[in-house]
Image (tube, rainbow, N blue to C red; front, side, top):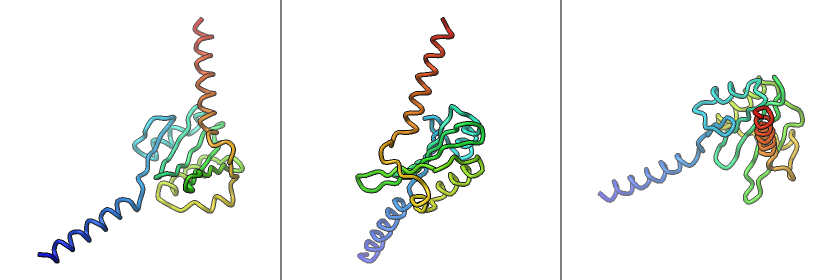
Length: 147
């Protein structure tokens, strides 16, 4: 009986460790949750008003469409209390963006991007700032054109 209890506790420990070992993936398109990667990526394709975020635990990968087939991308690495945000040195095309998000969602370690991308220590809310500015412009446009 004691052996079964010990085995049960060992099972619970390994089961709980397996639940925490792979963080769940969360997709968002312009602030709205998406059920799949394909839904999020198809929503940003050639849509200069859209942005996507793929969250994996405390880290995330995000992108915005600058113009058709031209995407700015950022990745955040959780480094204890300090969050590190890296930006692509040049914009990506859609196929490279799709590949990058697919690899990220699959759990691939993309820490090598720290050497290839630019550390943005002073602008951690770059995409957020873009979204806010676009929202303000949209509201002003509606007010101006509705008058």
